[in-house]
Amino acid sequence: DTAVSQTPKYLVTQMGNDKSIKCEQNLGHDTMYWYKQDSKKFLKIMFSYNNKELIINETVPNRFSPKSPDKAHLNLHINSLELGDSAVYFCASSLWDRNYEQYFGPGTRLTVT
Amino acid sequence: GQQVMQIPQYQHVQEGEDFTTYCNSSTTLSNIQWYKQRPGGHPVFLIQLVKSGEVKKQKRLTFQFGEAKKNSSLHITATQTTDVGTYFCAGSHNYGQNFVFGPGTRLSVLP
Image (cartoon, rainbow over all chains, first blue to last red; front, side, top):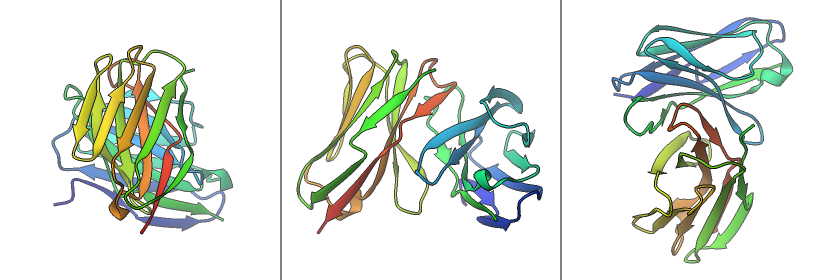
């Protein structure tokens, strides 16, 4: 009965490859987010979707493309991976009109070699 | 752009000592949230503050929002080893559409 789940938990890949990370929430939330946490633990928002519509798109390379097939899912596809993409990627969800308390998934540790 | 700073970056305390982390924004915030991330874990929501001068308590944790809504603090009384982790503040200008996280304060508690 995990609230916010992400797959895979670990991802090791080579530069230039394309990879996807999946996120699912079973909390009935209508807003989902992707965050990147670098090696210094800085948490930076990348994207936010409300009811499947993109509402936040921070300055992120267009190699990163989110996709929300429904309110419970938000996937992140990354093209042409670079060394600097190595980080922990967190998915989170919240209710738009309920204090925006965010529930985070366990994270996906991406290592690009 | 909006910046949220936190001090200190690291804090080592003896179990039983108090701990405070401070969060400062370069601009006035609409609301601020606090999260805790255990080593190897994910951020977990602790609390949200909305009103100017607001003070909220959760057992040994006390959260404050400054009068000008540009700063906040988290104080832990009599730390325990279970308090170990990184504490993040996250500020918003538009009531939650976009939260900017501070760099976090990493707390170590020595038994």
